[in-house]
Length: 80
Image (tube, rainbow, N blue to C red; front, side, top):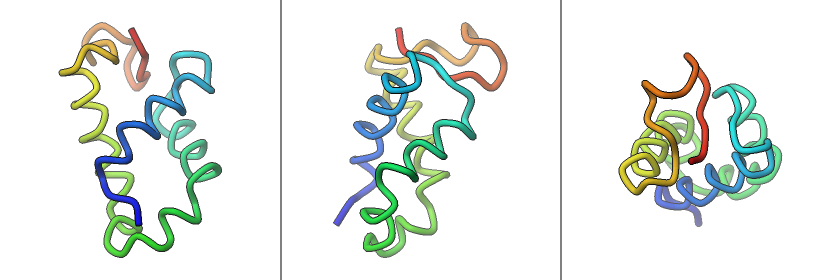
């Protein structure tokens, strides 16, 4: 069963698949395409994953994996 901690890896993988940067809705679609079955069997994460994805982005920014929000274009999430 997946947890919100898995979202950090999924988010980083998604951004790599999407060329290093993408808008939130495109990232959500990508994560859903690759992890729908994981999310469906993950209790409350099924209902909170899009919120938790934002938490994961903040963690990746703190760890120097994603660009700070104020550096990327509005609505765009980017890897360093």
